[in-house]
Length: 200
Ligand SMILES: Nc1nc2c(ncn2[C@@H]2O[C@H](COP(=O)(O)OP(=O)(O)OP(=O)(O)O)[C@@H](O)[C@H]2O)c(=O)[nH]1
Ligand SMILES: [Mg+2]
Image (tube, rainbow, N blue to C red):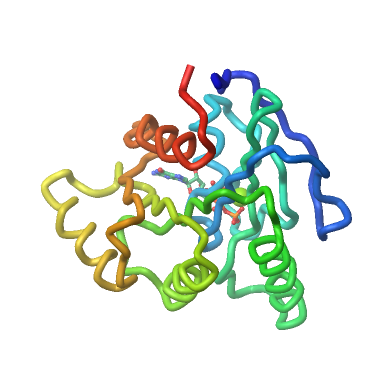
């Protein structure tokens, strides 16, 4: 089946299960630290400037935002973790919202787990990766902001990330930049492979 990736719009925002779309359309969710570039990743994939709202201010995305692509696939933008300036209560609310979605959503086919290519993954990054492995959710690991690292150092950074995460070679690792669009095609290939579509 073919999919027109240019036909995209925001569908709805949800705080809990009762607001999720009720159908069989496959979903791929984005997970990662606040400010890592999840919303930018969606905009780059969909070739749109600010469909998923981005900001220099962490904590911009607060609900699960569902993006409809050609009525065949959804990308789900998930609020970032590890944002220090939120209360314990808010962090717990966030945890429940993410956990409910990731552990119960039948439509979920894979998670794009984003980490900053420049740094060793944080404890939260490791925990997220372990969580996804535990629930046997296929992971597409995307290392963002590659434009900030000279190419000669890419291998070294990739090794550091893989080692820290105890990366499963069965998962896909993609070096990405929303500035240069590095890794764009690979990301689409990985997403469509997990949702059984052919790229148009
Ligand atoms: N240089 C560079 N900057 C990036 C890249 N991706 C994102 N940024 C910048 O990083 C900041 C955060 O990006 P967002 O896409 O809003 O991050 P997010 O993960 O959605 O953040 P939350 O919604 O707070 O969880 C913005 O200032 C972006 O312009 C990238 O690949 N390269
Ligand atoms: Mg965001």
